[in-house]
Length: 229
Ligand SMILES: Nc1ncnc2c1ncn2[C@@H]1O[C@H](COP(=O)(O)OP(=O)(O)OP(=O)(O)O)[C@@H](O)[C@H]1O
Ligand SMILES: [Mg+2]
Image 1 (cartoon, rainbow, N blue to C red):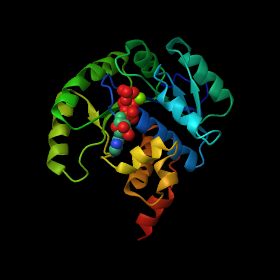
Image 2: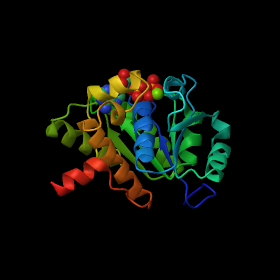
Image 3: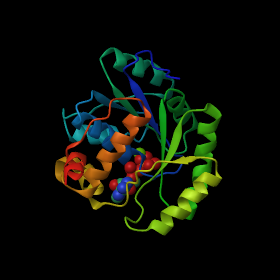
Image 4: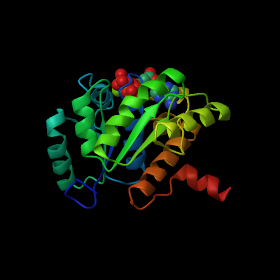
């Protein structure tokens, strides 16, 4: 079920009760990947820490557009953005915030739960999974900032997530210095290093999200290069 009033708008909520899970980094890069693929994309920042809005301030008028919202206003902001033609809306949420997280999840067509593949983070993620289950939205755990080449770690983490009754996103965004450098400079990995692994992984994530959302799937430049190689 789509809660947004415009059939061409899809909303993705990024939620995790755990601080520092990678929510804002993921939200920024998903919206940026959509913009790069030609979609009209914007972010809604519901976090009082306003990290995404700070990042927007650093990059001046460069897209994606970021607007802020108090939790009760999220649905109205989505409606207004839809009327302005938004195709993909990404909502960034604060940690430990039941109201912002539940309002964002209520409005979402897809929920992504970023989580580091470590025992403490995985255990803490259960609270977020319960919230999403209560609201019955399609949701996937996405592993962030873990080691890039550690199949056994991810196999164990996937099993644990399945044990919680949740699904795992097949795309992983492992630890890449490019994310830290980009965000600190008010940029994206596409801007500081367009050929990087981080850029390719983010493109793949966006393509996967479009598939989940029944949107037409753009062929990103790096994915295209890979397929023709
Ligand atoms: N895939 C990644 N590779 C490397 N560093 C990452 C990655 N994802 C996030 N980080 C880093 O981890 C830190 C926390 O990330 P971020 O601010 O996105 O988390 P958050 O969940 O939004 O935090 P908060 O709960 O405080 O809002 C930042 O320094 C960010 O640069
Ligand atoms: Mg954040």
